[in-house]
Image (tube, rainbow, N blue to C red; front, side):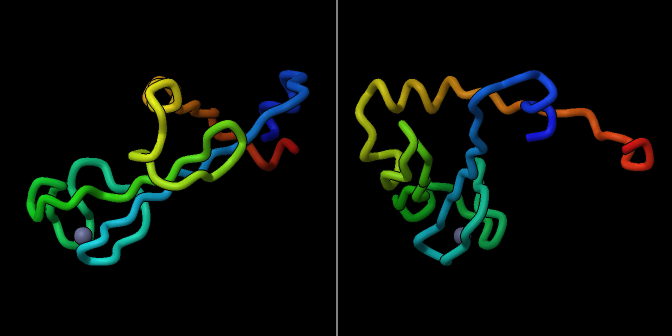
Amino acid sequence: IRYMKDCGMGYGSVNHPVDRDPVCGYNGIIEDVCPKCGRTEDAHNQPFERIRRITGYLVGTLDRFNDAKRAEESQRVKHEVPATDSAAE
Ligand SMILES: [Zn+2]
């Protein structure tokens, strides 16, 4: 957010992806394997629930997105900001 301010960005937002494993109940970020129980989506033929913000709203899991929204989500880029020296601030 500080970096956005320094760049003069008039509008920005922070997205927090939330995944859930309906089998074991884990909530957090799940890549291909659930970090709690170690299963993949194929293991119980049960997909992970992936909640994403789209067009400003949390609208439920990815499976309810239309093709355009799915494309937008899949093309997102994570931005990293170098750590700042807090003593200099
Ligand atoms: Zn799990």
